[in-house]
Length: 513
Image 1 (cartoon, rainbow, N blue to C red):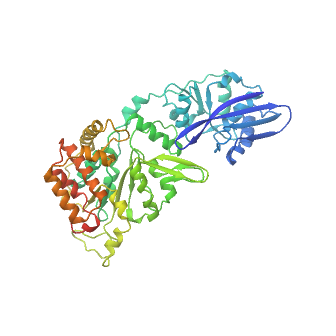
Image 2: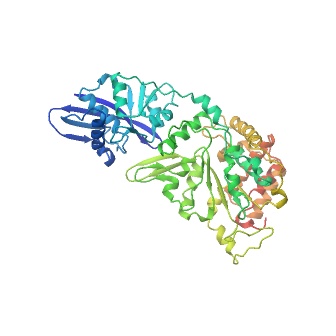
Image 3: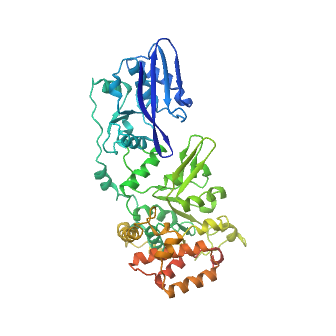
């Protein structure tokens, strides 16, 4: 008897349907075809033991299984459950009609219990788009899949429970999730707030400008000046995720297996902070079994690189293309995958190897030329792609012991959201452009109009600091954001002066400007 069950395979951050065709006929053997990897081939032992522990048995006849499409490699243990259900249905122990319109995925333990799997959300999205009526997944993945509307998601704890559900002997209620209500309730909950930061008003302003325009930012300052502390508070002033952004971000984390058990949609923008020993593959993604890297996990959020010059040169240089294109294309002999990489880069570093160059009270102990060599670890093209570069100094004692609270993240966030609304209207006809940092050269010439006085300030700065054409574009983008925060349609001299001040670390001006 031939029976078809349906599962899914993840490619990139999307899923494709996999049909598990099972035939049980006369004889006594087992064969699985359709490009399964080792984990899928080993499912025979897991499924056989799980079926025995669940009160059923593996068919004592010839069983042939085909995983279609046969030219797509099937990876992982998530095919255990559809293989077991297909074998039972082909053996006449489950009504075949109960499998129609159902997508089934899950890993089986030897005792018949179901273990959580990766990539359930993109599978559920694919199931709904193709008109499936329901989906059966492990209980720990049920709330993740249930955020997809118009799809009945059944979370099961064991193979026995799935068999009873399909046979109709023990009913199982679909998992219900009010996605919009939960998203609205949790989208403004943060662990950190800028009200806790003493002083550093200039740096807070730089963060506000960066968030308002989606600009990359680099902080340079001595140890203990608050670089990491303030960077962790950055998500609290970014605009809230839209429901579409939350869905896209959650898909990436689902594929990477980063969602906790019982997770739903991610409601706040991701904040990723990899250690400086990270490899290029771990940063951009890929590997033998391709997975999203840190830059994709930071999509729609923040990628924070602490101790920026300590990252290897190869790691830093692979970010140049994603910073411009907002996607990362990974091509290998066996596959070619594209992951989204629309992140905001926030980096921090010491000004020199000892950490105290330009410190107001401590002396720098570095040898002559050490400061330039330290900064040269970051290439000029990469430094050009960082719109805002800020020097940060330690807070003095009087400011630290003050009990006066700083401006709250919520207040700053309101100004950021207002500026973003202006940009959304400005770029409403431009597909893929949502903020000033994403402007192309054509959009710059259309929407950025400095006054003659402001343009003279930019011209003098470009000549004095010997800046590149890319730095010219970055200054114009930042000045446009500053004008948006001020509610000004034109870029005035004070807006241009502030934008120019955020290029203080350009090579020819470092330590002098």
